[in-house]
Amino acid sequence: MDVFGIEGPVRLSGSVTINGSKNATLPIMAAAILAAGKSVLSAVPHLSDISVCGQLLGRLGCKLSRGSNGNLCIDSTVIDNPVGEYEIVRRMRAGICILGPLLARCERAEVSMPGGCAIGDRPINIHIRGLRELGAKIHLKNGYIIAEASKGLKGKDIFMGGPFGSTVLGTANVLMAATLAKGKTIIESAACEPEIADLANCLNKMGAKITGIGSPRLTVEGVRELRPAEHRVIPDRIEAGTFMVAAAITAGKLHLHNCRLDDMMAVVDKLRNVGVTIDAAGDGCVVTRTGPIKPGDITTQPYPGFPTDLQAQFMALLSLAEGNSIIIEKVFPDRFMHVAELNRMAANLRKEGPTVIVAGVKKLIAAPVMASDLRASAALVLAGLAAEGTTAVSRVYHIDRGYEKIEERLNPVGAKITRESD
Image 1 (cartoon, one colour):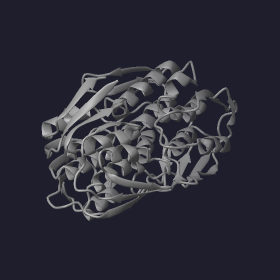
Image 2 (cartoon, helix red, strand yellow):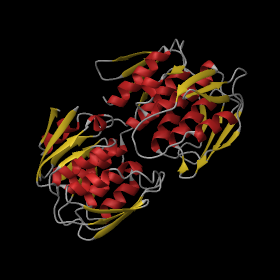
Image 3 (cartoon, rainbow, N blue to C red):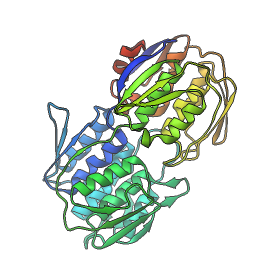
Image 4 (cartoon, one colour):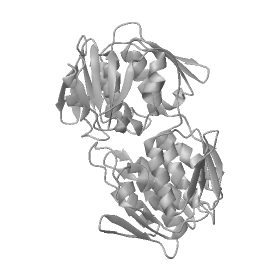
């Protein structure tokens, strides 16, 4: 396994281009199952999660290829093995997204219970409930979800709310299945994330009839078939937020290109509140910090609230604030495995249930730390940029799941990150 060596403290300065969204790409790749033929996606990042999803689609019968321009072509003319195998699905939470499309196109599917980051319990009961509402017969056997719809799917009014708000992947699954269901489906309490809007827009290009995009009520008029389409994936708002924090934690200045501020209002607001300047510029923004980091309070919520996927990165930033901050996790209450690792770097963090009290310190000190999940690993890299000494971050395969060659993109703007094999 690879290890990052991060020398700090540094001050970042320069330009970085934000890649296409991982969380938008994965369900859109699954959506290609719905239309026989070649769909072409552009702005698809080179990430391990994308590769795993490609392997999953390949096992179903799809043929995938990358063009010289970086476009990803998915030929789903043949789907002859509607099975999401454990050895692949266990490696990636979004693997569950093939369930709805397979059920709609093949009228049957066998998909392993999903894996992914260790960030707490993430049940899929809402996915299953929604697909059952559409007429699927579903049972569990040997760790697999067995779904059948021999008479096809039928549209229905479905409530998708859960104990921690709307489910993003659950909304994606039911939305994709509903496009080929007979009649009208209304998805109430649908996830409003930009990634769901991007999926819906792609489905409409494929011939679906979806309205209410971006709202908590999606209306789907079922169609007989969908056709392949070309689609450009939206920029990754989580990657953009991570690079914003990188500029802030190093008292630097970064010009981020291909960054949609309209998708990040909660993030921008919190950064400005703690002393970071963010100015729109061209197709992105300029992020600068010249003064001290002010304390703040953050509560993660479903979109348009503050994203849980940036909670760890903000914790690293606020650990250097002049005063006490509070972070409350309301999406995944157990998503705090990075707390102990940041404390190893001389942060002063105290966890109390779904809350972390952050007592700001004057400096972080380098230490050997271990990444526990994708976003926690990003937080440790950010902390390493600001810490005194050389921080060793192990298990960086986690960060490769969501950030394309992060060291090669940060080093040209002032970082000092090396990758070595352990």
